Image (cartoon, rainbow, N blue to C red):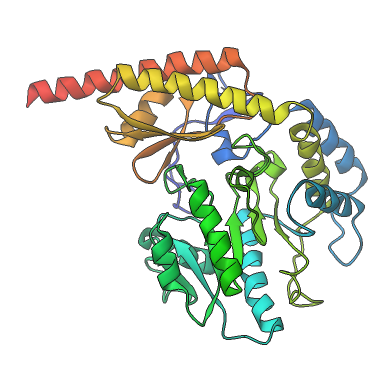
Length: 399
């Protein structure tokens, strides 16, 4: 069938009619366990009653006015994020890529305001993914995303992930800051060691640099803390977030300290849709849930139960699984078999997952998942891995 859409997605031949909690349903009633969560977006599951009610009520009142006027729910969400994090202020966007663009611009303008406009370069890391704009694909540095889009946007110096000596060597008179994902999502659920993150903070302080975190995927409770940087005990100066903060509604934000935003004065940056009343209502509703007493402990407990179960499956299918990675409910299966085969086998078992770099299958279910569904998913994941293992043995026997 000829499609009227850009041919840029390799879509599975699946379409869903409705969702509830951790489950998605096709038009003919087939049920799937959603461990992809719209690529770590549906933080509180599908059709959460609080989000549905909030969005419906806001939609009856007001959708869009632009940032020419005050938006009270935007003020409220900014204040709540400031209270719960290192940040003093927020700039609201429609996506993670826009949040990271804002972070990059904020870092450059900081040094410009300090009388050092030559300091515009950011140190970034191999395996990173920061978005699909021309600047953010340059920051990520992956050739598969850069190919065919002309000269790479200047201003980014890549070093190996986790190599503090390489970071030190890359710092120069034009360096403005360091940009890192505390947990690389697209890069294969690679967790930056806490000691490494603390080392980056020290380097920034010693050299007058800004530390920028990309928590688009790891934030809003995904790792069992509100933000993953909390595990290291050191905070950034600027942070981009998105995905989970909207619970499925498109929104993002750039959070920063008052010092870091000193160059972001009137007129230097803007957005038409960012921070609109619909998005702000939903963002506040998500925080109502995630900041409720006991919620983050639930994520930590669920993540531990899930990880332990995956480790048991690794023991029974050593030819399929090499390693279990991640934190909280941001987990990955580093595969020995092609991850495409594992993803396909999971889908056959009605478990939805999503691929990542380094031959990883990501497992990022809604944070509201209950033990009964973790156990059901583990049974299906084990069945999928056994099917892949059996297929590998059949292929090897036929050679």
